Structure formats: C-alpha cells, structure tokens
Image 1 (cartoon, rainbow, N blue to C red):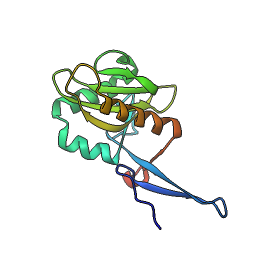
Image 2 (tube, one colour; image 1 turned 135 degrees about the vertical axis):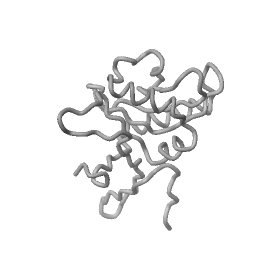
Image 3 (cartoon, rainbow, N blue to C red; image 1 turned 45 degrees about the horizontal axis):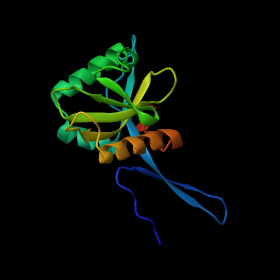
Length: 160
C-alpha cells in the first residue's frame, strides 16, 4: 500500500536497504529571485523557497513584503539578523516579516556563511507572540533543516 504524500512536500526519494526500503518526502526548493551571473550577482543572500511556501506567498504576500525581502537579499540577510524584519525563533529558524503586515515567512540559513536563506513556510501572524499552532510550524521548519529534508531544483530554472 502506498503511503500518502504529506502536503508541502515535492519529491519522494526511496532509500533502498534491501528488504527494508524507506520513503522520504523532500521539500523541493527553487530560487525566489533571478541571480544573473555576470558581472556580479546583485543579491548578497540567495533566497530559496519551497513549492508550498511559494503557493502561499502568491496568495498572501504583498508587493511591500516582496520589495523588503529582495532589498534584504541584495544587502545581505546577515545585516538584519536579530532585528526586524528578520527575527530568530527556536531551532535555528528565522521569521521574516514587516510589522504592519500579518504575514511571516519561516525559514533558515542553509550554511554558516549565511549566504543562502531557505523559506519553508508562510504563516499568518495575528498577535505579538507566536501561538501554539505557529510554534508547531516553526518546529517543523527546524526539523526540515535538521534532517535536511529539502533539495534544490535548479536545473528547471536553467542553473544547470
């Protein structure tokens, strides 16, 4: 019997251990902004986004938030880490947002250089503190990072 595909996960990888195969669901990540290679990439931070987060962003994210996101990517997310618009959450997860909007992007830095930020989830933020449900989503993003349950899909975008 085939196991159901969890929402938000794009790829299925079967790991074969002989008699004990394991199915692993992975988030598919694509670049959010174009990265011209010549003469120099304009973004100090590459921003990747999961398929499901991209769908949520298309329906919830405003031009104002996208403009701020690209501005921060151009200047380097590390310049904003720990203060608005980029605040730290448990599990090495970061929350990106604008105070006047109720949408927050949940993601993480892919490496210690902080040159790549991966957005896994989009939440609607209503109050000052995260609710229990929102914290579960933060914890899920932390798990994705910890278990590396994501894979970049750059060939489809001409990145080779």
